Amino acid sequence: MNKFRIILSHLFFVILITLLASCSSVQYKSNGERIYFTATSSSGKPIISQGFTMMHGRIACVNCHGANGNGGNVHMMTNFEAPDITWAELTGPHEHHAPYTEATIKDAIIKGMEPNGEELEIYMPRWQMADEDLDDLLSFLKTLK
Image (cartoon, rainbow, N blue to C red; front, side, top):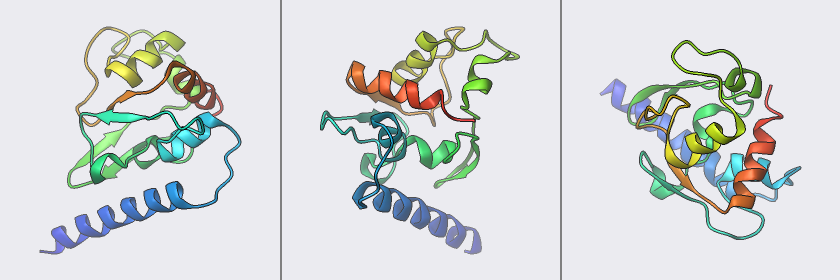
């Protein structure tokens, strides 16, 4: 029962953060930052996630990868490890595949694919968004340190 309460409290926290981020009057420095924190675009074009989605699709990058992109252990009905997606980490050396490039980062976001063609974990949603929004998100990812 105690484990169930912990899971519920984590789920409540994620829902609360997502609702506050999407409903507040926070001013984002860029459209890419807005997408990262809220999964919404300032253009009004839809951003849709497929795959491992919770909270009726109201999940954003920040919910798993954190405000600075450092990732870590995520508790959402299950536990999993979200990777560090800072620009240096993405484009640096990796043990099992080549470093990410702009094109392969876009493939990871849209198709859920690693640079070597293998699928990312099921926990990574596959996002559908306009090309301009994807470019804006990529620009924001470059600022994560």
